[in-house]
Length: 315
Image (spheres, helix red, strand yellow):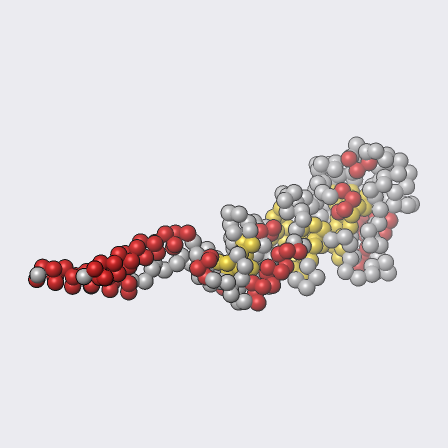
């Protein structure tokens, strides 16, 4: 009888411990939400961009890097210095140090400058703005630009009031071996010394593949006809976009105190809610977003508690 009493008391103690014991702390989300919004130099890096894995939208993953205080954008065509990110108008301004401008021409037979080429999977999210002109310099007659229309050079045309006819007025041409072109922009010269194209016309600006010696790029944020090429803004102005479905998701996430991110493996949208992630927003049940490992560790505790109650009921 004494032994039975002792065993019953021991079992009561074990049951009390099993019921009082808390499940292991749930593994924190891979990305602390306070680290997603960051800075590099004087630029703010915020959604959809990010410097940390898991932050931002998956369409912009592995894109921006902060190197010695300089924000750099890396795509297959090369690396570019980020000068500005306009979150209101969804634009990002880039600088290619090997690009020509109105003061100097940077050209070589093998091609100078990065141009602009993005990965096919990233192209729905990032592309040069419609008001950005690429001025391709010294392209050979065998260039893909001129195949199919060797007499008319159809790809070459002004973009938002900017074109080669105006660009020929830059002082850079005076210093380039006295080879300042004259006459119309795309006159009798075959091929023309300069060919102005929009991104939509060719979808990839690969200077060497287009068999060009170099390029310049300018963009328009306001009417530029009166200012002339000396007043153009030189650089690459790219526009970024998000899928329509994502906009509703991110708004709901932010409205409930979360930060918009993505799954590192599936690239699906995630709402980062501190120590757990949600596929919807931070008002949804935390248990629904817990890792499967957490549910597995909780199962033995549930079983132990059930057994305790069964044994106590039979005492």
